[in-house]
Amino acid sequence: MTSPTLTFLGAAGTVTGSRFRIDAAGGSVLVDAGLYQGPVDLRRRNWVPDDGAASLAAVVVTHAHLDHCGYLPCLVRDGFTGRIVCTPDTAELVAIVLRDSAHLQEEDARHANERGFSKHRPALPLYDAADVERTLALVDPVGYGEETRLLPGVTATLQPAGHILGSASAVLDVDGERLVVSGDLGRPRHPLLRPPAPVPATGTVVVESTYGDRTHEPAQPHLLADAVRRTVGRGGCVLVPAFAVDRTELVLMELHRLVAAGEVPRVPVFLDSPMALATLEVYRRAVVGGSPQLRPEARELLVALDALHVRPAADAAESIRLNNPTAPCIVVSASGMATGGRVVHHLAEQLPDPRNCVVLTGYQAIGTRGRQLLDGATQLKIHGRYVPVRAEVVDDPDFSVHADGDELLAWLATAPEPPRTAYVVHGEEHGSSHLAARIRAELGWTAVVPRLGEVVRLD
Image 1 (tube, rainbow, N blue to C red):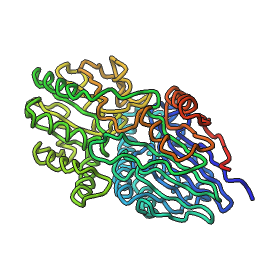
Image 2 (image 1 turned 60 degrees about the horizontal axis):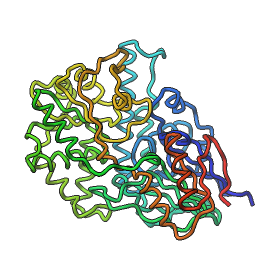
Image 3 (image 1 turned 90 degrees about the vertical axis):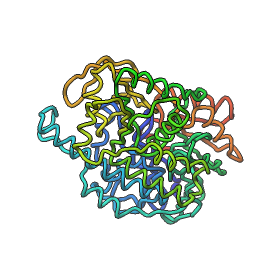
Image 4 (image 1 turned 180 degrees about the vertical axis):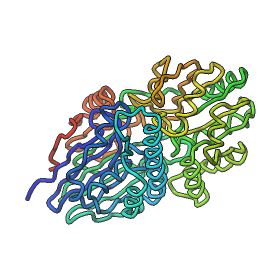
């Protein structure tokens, strides 16, 4: 019988584009189908057709962030008609995320064609709304702990990963061999979610390394409080680029805590992201329904939403008004790395004004506008022209929901016995290699940073 294999089709040597193919005697499946984000040479990979899409039996999606699910409509366009397996919460969030992604791509293409700043004539979206609807028809939710058959001899079981609502690690049994794919792992002290489930006995583990070379500093709540006080004091706007899924919820909870404690003045809080507004409803239902993923403290999210009187920017006209607010306020808007969405328009108008402040609330991938701001850029290219950066830029790492190097090692150490091999993915080169070295030195395991396109045996 042919040995089952694992191929690293994405997130190898970089932190986005997660895609891992398992080939077994009965056929092929993927774990994750994510978009590449960041530098243009990575984003070009999104446009490469997947010649094997039509032959895939299933895709297992670990969670609803674009770099793990955003390539799904491309697979469907290229002929995929199999099952898309994920948790019920992920299914709800994937629908929101993919519809928003298609809308933004269509809008960006239209904007590029109107302004003439694209090299392509005409500029086209990577996929459109029709592609997304065909994709969503294939989604097949399964609960945590439910074994589901993907192929003859191949089953998948999802277990909590503690990263965002519905996030999972995938446990695949493949022709008698076991593979665990971590997905993105959350932190033990996530304010809303319980910690990741332990690693089951396995021969192979694929582990993320977004923060593989870092250790999170102790919480510094004064960073956001100080930024708000300074900005309000000079009559400016605090702009918070935040991922719609999970990050927005955490930012609003922290703002409520600071206002309730009297640490920041009460000013209007605007939420300018249709996707975030839809996501909030999914989180709200999970809290009200008592989801076992959530900590008891998660009810504070409902308190925060009511107490802050969060004002939604319900349409484009309201969003445009927030480009240049007439009084001090806080604007939370997607996307979190400023790669697209309404926050890009706000940055274009607000960055030149030194009264304003941009608060970065999590990981910023290389090549994104968020990373450029984090690295001290004095000008930013937005919609084909350069914008001066005179606004204050504050990095607040407390909002990160990725496990750091110590926490990743602690999760791996929950395995009841050492696997044959640990493959370290979904990280920048130094982060992955650093974590792999620690796994070898501290756990005594074989740890490898795979190359893009590398094929390995699972037996």
